[in-house]
Image (tube, rainbow, N blue to C red; front, side, top):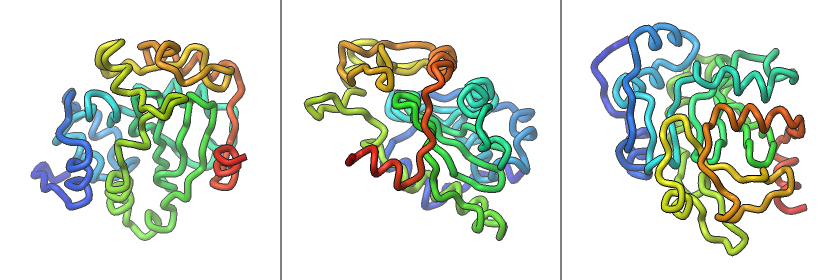
Amino acid sequence: MNTTFELDEDFEWFLEQFGSPTFSQSVTSETIKKFQGKLPDRLLAYWQEYGFCGFKNGLFWVVNPDDYEGVLEAWLGDTEIVEQDAYYVIARSAFGELYLWGANNGFKYIIDTTNGWVIEKKGDKKNIAKGNMDDAIQLFFYLKRPEPLDIKDPEEKPLFEQCKIMHKPLAYDEMYAFEPALFLGGEPKLENTNKVNIFAHLSMLASFGQKELLDKDGLIQKAFG
């Protein structure tokens, strides 16, 4: 890989929305080499330049896929999804929403762990087949916005900043969780939140076995009934 980093317009736009990383840990050359050919070179270039990092004090994170292998297995190991492509968690939100990248399909799935949903996206199979994997990952970051990453309480007030004040900012391995989980009847209220270890918590949520696989139409039906 070329070690000279040049900022592209798409990631520059992402940084305009999210600011510079508020947390960063460097990525080893061994990790970079491990994912060469599996993930876009452009993503690996972001890793080299910014590290595995958090933005907006933990609202959005670019993560090491190795750390999420166990969580991914817990959520998708009994589905056909893992047979269709090699998937990796490349990013996540403060509330444990996971963003999956497939070696052949690109950005194909979101795991909304708070609701127990595995959401199927359009993906980038045609783009990647043409050798445009870097364009696909740049688009992923270009389309990200802070507001949809937050969760609102019943009064439509965003919870992230409230959680940050009550529970302190997140570390790399932490998330804000609802107790009980929303798919178990919990409500998205500040008094129902806690700061937990993301790996232990997401594995526990998967163990309830209540995940639903949703495409675009299924998601719309969930939102509007």
